[in-house]
Length: 362
Image (cartoon, rainbow, N blue to C red):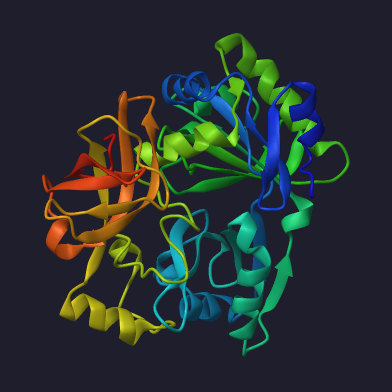
């Protein structure tokens, strides 16, 4: 099992540890609800160093990105980032990712899911017909997500970069906590605001950054947060989780990701996805709120009120912010309208739920 630069710190802090995507990761420290509310209302720190990072360089770097991703990366200028996905030949999703424009038309960083690092590298490499310079820097890169409404103001104390002025999906590069060549990005997987901090994992960079963050943050109530709360936070904002809500068999259009699927350029499976758009979908990813008592879990089947199977739960939880059980599910388009009542099959019993608008939290 792999470790991150911060694994021993999590253990020393008493975190509940478990394997995740091949890494020994903190699942929780003091409890999911407490950690969830800490991020939603104040600020918390996630170790997400297990994520993958690739650098693509050269005159044809943008061309390669354009051919393998669904979004239009030509719109990116220096200091801007973009959410996108890698469609496969069948119109499914190899992975979802972030594309960072370091130097327009020349240098880009792709940030991919930890469980898909090798898969994504091989997929992009197989399309690299113009010898774009590619570097897998995943093992050399540390990443902390400092999330919450107070996170950015706290982190501003550690840098001369004006990170409080960053707009959503933009980033700055400079010195942070005395460490050079750090990217601070107004992105994150919680919908609570805050930044993600990328740095070279060498010398004592990880220790310097961790200690500085908690030096300025602890007096203000900032705490370390585990992956369990990261999951409840992202679900309240209806952010897709690869392997649950999207995978090789789901199309970006079915997943509600039409906004990152741009038909103004050529990319893998464009004709398939264009056909889906024109002819209509047979299923859609929707939000569900439980009407009766019960928590929808990944893999639970869904029936309409006539007892016919119409879909499956992809993610579900008891929402700490809302005090309600919520979930995301693929259902047939005939049952996807807001307000439609369905039954989630929990232990062979139908438990009533209704289709609601996503995201669950504004």
